[in-house]
Amino acid sequence: MAQNTECHKQLRQELDSGERLLWVGQPKPGIWLRPSDGFRFAFGLVWLCFSLFWEASALAMAFQAKAKGQGDFVVWIFPLFGLPFVLIGLYWVVGQFWMDAWRRARTCYGVTDRRILILSPSLWKGRILKSLDLASLGEITLHERGDGYGTILFGSEMPWFTQYHYWWGIPFRYTVPQFENIPEARRVYNLILRLQREARHAAASSGPFPDKAFELEA
Image (spheres, helix red, strand yellow):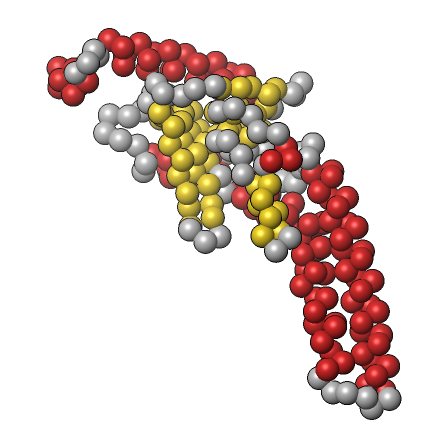
């Protein structure tokens, strides 16, 4: 409840004049796995095991060379070379799930009478706000589970193997805008569909002169 209260406060700051905030929510908290996470975890585990084997072998050779008085800094080149690969493996196996939980705990979703709002954290940019106009929204898809939790996608669904881009072996997830793993997903989905119909009807009724129509409504 406290988190939703904070989200409500943050999203209200993003509203336009006269805009009404009708629903506020967040993704399901904690660490949980998506269907695509099994493959990435298995791949990361293999990566990590190989990296640890390399690092252990390199360290053993370095200590042996040091004991024999052979070389100085040169003997530590291979252990240092393998260290980044160990760190990448740790991120694949553990870090990515912790980062995902951290991101979701700070993500806020909102539905207004005009827009879909998604406020999410960023390590480099602070916070990122995505705003989707209800009247111009295209495909909307609901994936619902038996417990009432579900995900609402705003756009064409991407295959899981295209959702990740990699930088130095570290996966970064790119997806269409979505309300991910929210409670009472169908109720929110129906609310969005109703508001979308109303927004499109209002846009069609305004005719070719929306500015004039707005002045008359004001």
